[in-house]
Length: 298
Figure 1: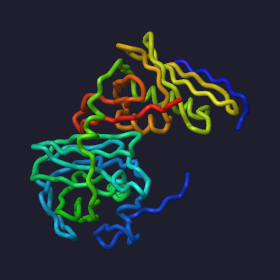
Figure 2: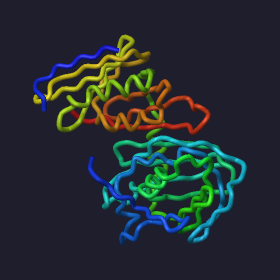
Figure 3: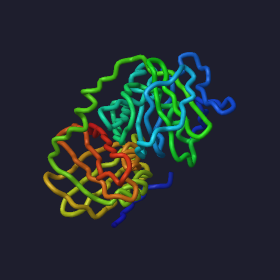
Figure 4: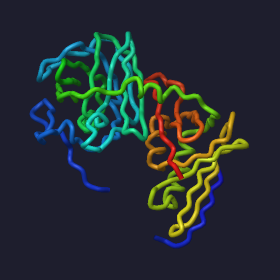
């Protein structure tokens, strides 16, 4: 990896959890319309084992999970825009023996599929609640999951959690179309090497926090420039096929998209114009994760 910096001159907000614990049960804090005004969640959706149960009561005490399980993880972006509650949730549904989780804020999207044993599940749950819950699961080995028409319930060990569902329709087909890329080219490289390059380039990304990815001749360049901070060009070895990649992105969106692929080779499929860029990797025995980031207009 080659790193070049040209500095011009030198130049964590607190958050509160939307959950509270009552004995062995976790519930949402009363916040008026909490399920539609939840803040942004980079929801690492339950990175342990997820198993099925078909129905929960309003305050579910879901029993021990059945035998069929799948491991899940990844970064699920959701919107912080209160005026668009549809994008503040994690969409989840089952098809046969597959559970799919999807979240988007319109500029990026994450989709994960896991093995599933149980009945049908079709829900849109508040991402902020799930994100806060995921942080508290710790070393839980298994998680029971179920829903009725109004609420989603989870259980792990002696603990349980319930939250109201978002009662808004989700554009399922449109979201699925975004991951069906028609790439003009692709780049494959070590995900952690790219993350390191992005972190070195980010201090020079300017007030908009943007970097340009340019891929050709066996390398991917991460380029950033700001008249006040200076310039940076990071070079990472890569396998490049098809047309050249040259697109500008929010650096933090790229870092979020790469998080599920740590320690693996990530495939970046780019499309013409401002069509979304798709990040994928072969499943590693757990969830199959796809992340989508929309390039910026420059």
